[in-house]
Amino acid sequence: MESRLSRLETVQAMLLEIGQLSTAGGDITEFIRAVHRSLGRIMYAANFYVALSEREDDSVRFVYFVDEVDPTPDPEERVTLASPDQSPTAWVMLNRRTLVMTAAEHNARGDGSSWGLGSTAEHWLGCPLLDRQHQALGAIVIQSYSAEHRFNDEDQALFALLANHVSNALQGLQSMDRLERAVHERTALLEQRNVALQEAQSELVRQEKLASLGRLVAGVAHEINTPLGICVTATSHLVQELKLTREELAAGEMTAESLEQFFDIVDQSLRIMTTNTQRAAALVRSFKQVAVDQSSDDIRSFDLKKYLSEVLLSLQPKLKGRPVKVEVDCGPDIKLESFPGAVSQVVTNMLMNSLVHGFEGDQSGVIVIKGALEGDTVVLDYSDNGAGMDAETLAKLFDPFFTTRRGSGGSGLGAHILYNLVTGALGGTVKVDSAPGQGLQYHLRFPRSRRKEKVAA
Image (tube, rainbow, N blue to C red; front, side, top):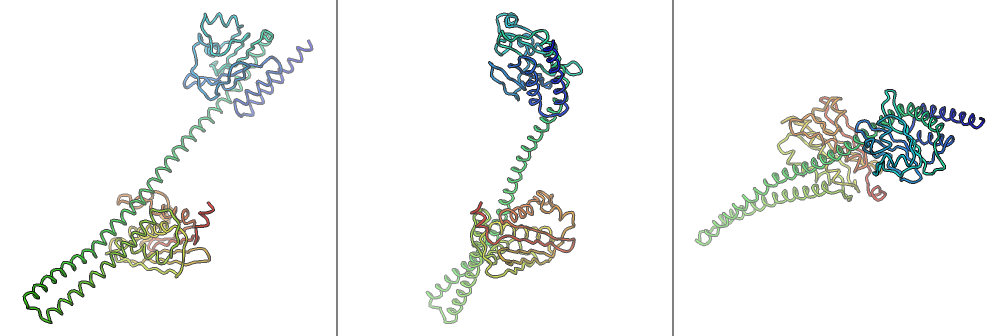
């Protein structure tokens, strides 16, 4: 009698603990593990498992499984729910009734075929886990592989009582678990889409850089055609004059005056060819340097003032025919050990932004680029006296894909690339000021040398 009373007190303490665990919330597996520990204090529970229903696809998960013989299944794996004739666990869930059987009864049910997937237990006890509408949440099972441990009527009644309390607790925990899993799945999906979006954005940025380089190639090629065309014309004229002079000499009609005229033509033609070939060579040199820098991620030493001249020379085709003057005020001997490609791309994007958005059509204007050194920090100020922009547009200037020229070929990536290059490759900061009719001003600050940072990285 005393032993029975002690057991009832233990059962009451166990049910109270289950209630407290259910109100505390938390992980379903941890809750069931605690239930298993409590159950072991009142009866033999070396082999114990809980299968929960996944109602949306008629599958089950063995969320908790402890067994002396059979291996533990993956708690996240969804297993198709068998028919009652194929599995005792399915029988309990689908019939929503308790099932108690011995090994002999188990084998008799199988009619010579396997009934269930696990090893046959000497004594098997399974109870359904039901919600308030008497629909199956799952099954809770305890079993023994030894004849020494069997479940009497009192054990069966206590286990059914336990199943009822676990059912009540699981309804709230399972709802929370499904919500958490849905949030986890949605978060994982959003992360995948975010990665895909970043990859697509990176590809668009890369294409925009290549397009910018392509426009530079087209502009320089067009610009080189002019001095080369002049050289071809001068050469053709010189060949024709040489032919006429030889004919005049062969006919004995050469005079001092005609020879002097020929020398003047030769001198003029050579000066024209020298001037224009030098101009073409300068364009090719600047284009080659800027193009190589923009397609390279290497650090090299360069003079800021000279390099700005190279960049602006390569941009002359864009400025040609526009009444826009570019002034450079850069201190001498500012030697950088950084990424010249980033510098050229930044200057190019700022200048093109001014030409496209700041100065409409034939509007005249002035662009000023100032470079100075403050300790080991380069200060690069860029300003134009163009149309400027309002506060709303200014706030979105560096946003990817934002453009006020969507229908005119604007990609909305120029200023975004500029920001990323200054803050990324150059390791600096960029600020921008503007107001309608007050032009646009960029203020850039970045370290003179990036070699130490690259070595450290």
